[in-house]
Length: 211
Image 1 (tube, rainbow, N blue to C red):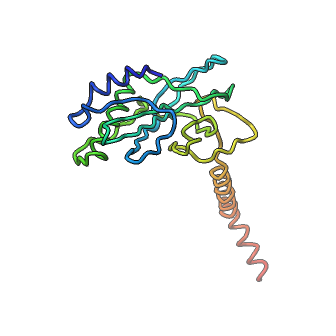
Image 2: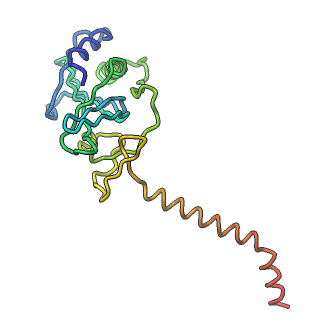
Image 3: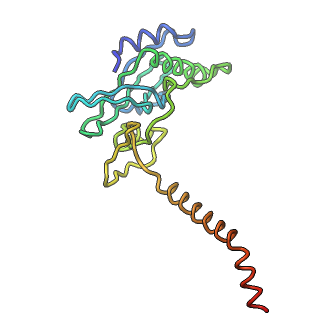
């Protein structure tokens, strides 16, 4: 995780007139006090390093949660973690590059301008994945944001019997409904082809039967 000072420096460096007096800090426990609004940055590019086994991985599914308070002009953030696929112990906080931090904080500032101050002509939010789009499917039980129910890719926290991980990404899994649908389509296609190829044989058989 980048030092909080880096986040604070970039936040004030790119702040608009509206957010110049705002402060940025971190939080651990969920904020339930009235007056706080949420912004969640999904699919951020980040690095993770397990201190237990030394495993390292890159993910484009990192999630950062922000809580904004207009009256106190405060933003509290939490970098949500992922578990190591080998240890599955504690959630590991992500390390995010300054380039991606800048994108995330610009999105935060534009969200404050739009959702807190009601500005209209606000730029659209930018992707924080660093241009990476290909990735493995999502292992929800290794994702802290999924556990909290705020991950964009959250489906179920049910852990399968086999903990398999794909080679091309951090998260791996299967979609049974898609697989069954594909099998059904293939079977239907085979039946159609067989009927088409044997249509003359069926026609002759019917003629002989009714002759």
